[in-house]
Image 1 (cartoon, protein in one colour):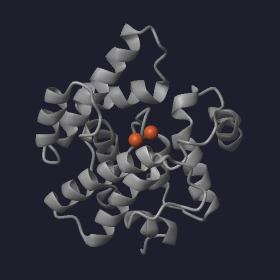
Image 2: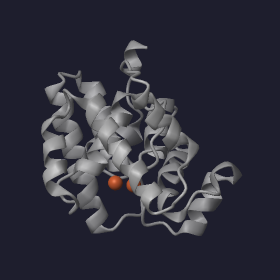
Image 3: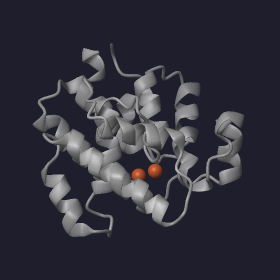
Image 4: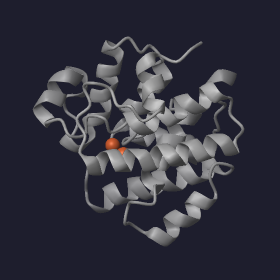
Length: 200
Ligand SMILES: [Fe+2]
Ligand SMILES: [Fe+2]
């Protein structure tokens, strides 16, 4: 199966025509893509699987610069109750689908890169980790650097630690935790592991 042209272009760093992202955001996406590329090579993934994973770096925040009302219209009633800061994932997934992308696991990875989701495949979980661990973020840098060093060989445990930290943060700030996030956490708490999408 070949990659959709929009996904193949993103793997080269060419954003879709509908992208709305500041230079700062594009730089962040580049650092995420770089980590995803490094981890894919360390895992020995075949070129297509690696490109698909790298493309996630350049697609996940592609409409982070779009206004919340436009994004809310795009995602429809089912996700309209999402808080503004997480609408850009589902919004990008809708626009990719409109372009003809039918890789459901890739669309899920883009849509749920902030919230997490129990059905994320290996690339989706790597994106979830790379988005949090990329070195341009200034947040708990020692801890994040140690987690980076454990990727990709210890991905399940690393992603579990990130989900734990994010859920605790939400609870400490008395913010709601989405059911998708709780179910993502339960995958780790119950010790379940995943196979690569291609192996399922
Ligand atoms: Fe994001
Ligand atoms: Fe991001």
